[in-house]
Image (cartoon, rainbow, N blue to C red):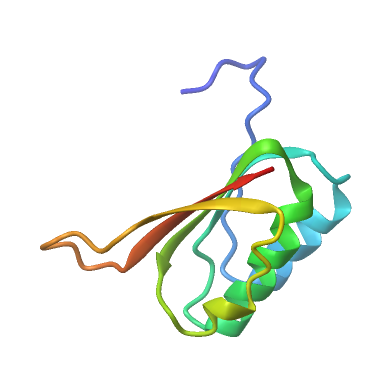
Length: 102
């Protein structure tokens, strides 16, 4: 449980468009971390990933869970350093990418 004075916000959306509207309403460099695992439709996932990067503080993270190669070339990597953790043996997911904003 978080302390009542915590500045942590946790949101779960079934539709990436709602998440995009939420983060779009905040100023750039507002968030320390955004987890991207919103949608099995990869074009919408990439759109959300690209919308997330300006909203992350320098040194902040965009964590992309269950990443694979479908449409990932559409993600703009120009503002982030990327660390990729490949699928682990016995794990049902795909790669996880941690993007650190420069």
